Length: 115
Length: 111
Image (tube, rainbow over all chains, first blue to last red):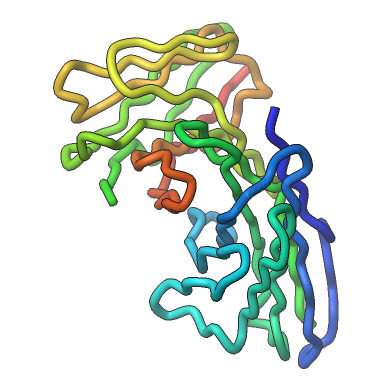
């Protein structure tokens, strides 16, 4: 079945650091990928839609200069949290869909902790 | 995007059948109903998807009435490992339509 892989699974870094998270579709091509954020005991919140070869579409309230998304190929989207601060600490999850009328598949998430 | 309503939490004993109902009164004609399971510190895992009537796979069944304004996920003979949060989502499977997550149902299976 379709597999979405995220890397790294866990990252701890100092405040002010920029962190890049990768999302790969391992056995299919995805022109669109989605990025979500999840705080403890809460549901997933959509951050942005990543489109291959074009600019990402951000949800209201998500700073596009803070969360840089690059979707340079049909199998890879990256989310870079720039100048991360403790309030950016969260669980970041990506998803992608391989074919029409098939369910979306999610990565296993990246736990980001900013000290 | 359709909004869904589910019970916040449910408890069940091992070996019992668990039914989780989701309301989606504003579901659109092209919307599918999809259920996901999420364990702590993991991404959601696909369980089952349907459009109407009944769908069954190796882990669950999904019952959808004719008006499609609700759906019921049925988990047969749950075990402790089924303790998780279950999300019901409705939306188009167009590939470029994001899923909007509600609060989900936290299922606790007790020995």
